[in-house]
Structure formats: C-alpha cells, structure tokens
Image 1 (cartoon, rainbow, N blue to C red):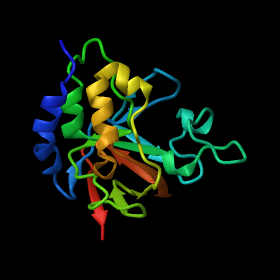
Image 2: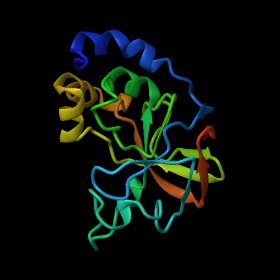
Image 3: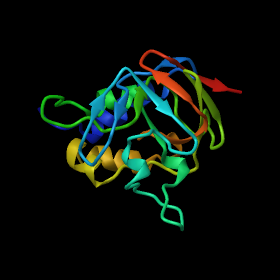
Length: 181
C-alpha cells in the first residue's frame, strides 16, 4: 500500500477541518511504556503529578524541564481521527502513531487555543502551547508529504494536540471529549 500524496492531503483538508468542535468519543486508547511499544487498553488513569503512570513520560520524555523532569505540556497527546484515517494506510505493517488517544475533533488553534480545558471521562486536560510538529518517525511511517503537510499548517494542528493533566481522573474508550468554554 502506498503512502498518502500531497494532492490527496490537500483534497482531504476541507473534510479534516469539518470535524466536530466538541463531544467526540475517545478511540484507540494507547499506553506507551517504552519506545516503539503500544498497549491498547479500555481505560487509563491520568494524574497531574505523573501524567499517565507507567508511560515513558515519567522516565524518558522527549521534552524536559530544566531539572530533567518531563514537560507537563506533553503528558497526553490526542490525534485527529480524520488525519489518522488519511495517513495510516498500512495498519498491518506500520505501527500506530502512539498518541494517547484519537478522536474526531477540530483541533485547530481557533477551536482549541492553548489553555483550553477538555473534560474527558473524570479527568480534565489542558491544551498545551507545545506544538506537535510531527517527528522523523511520522515522516518515515506516513511519508514526506504527510510530514510537510503537518508542518505547513501549524495553526491547524494536523498532527494533533498535546495536553497537561489539569485534574486527575480516568479516561475510557468511548468517553466524550467536551470542550469547557
């Protein structure tokens, strides 16, 4: 199966941007205990102090504070469902991107500016100002056009959003992601 083309990405952009503004369901709830590992689960616990206990954020975060601890703005990552469906074509041979969960939600800066609170299950997440710009692994797995597409449209947050945990709680597959206005 081939990777998505620039033409396909641009043609799909209006559909991606028409995602619901709030109320979408959590899907593909995923734990990442170590690099390259994915464990799909029915529920996770999130805490302000520890992010997702057992996840690599607590031991080997990709973004750190000056003291070496994980940056709280990257505790939870959320990927737009429409983007996942567009770029993840070979689900047998290409690993899931590893985001905490996927949902069909408008993740643009216009809809979810940094600081926006999201009620998810019994938890509350806070949209971070850290931009998820797609890493080299995204480029390898989904192609250079998908990588460039994400980076060319920063305000659209096509690679999704990063969040800190504002209120401890439990998130389950099927829980609604409600924007707290």
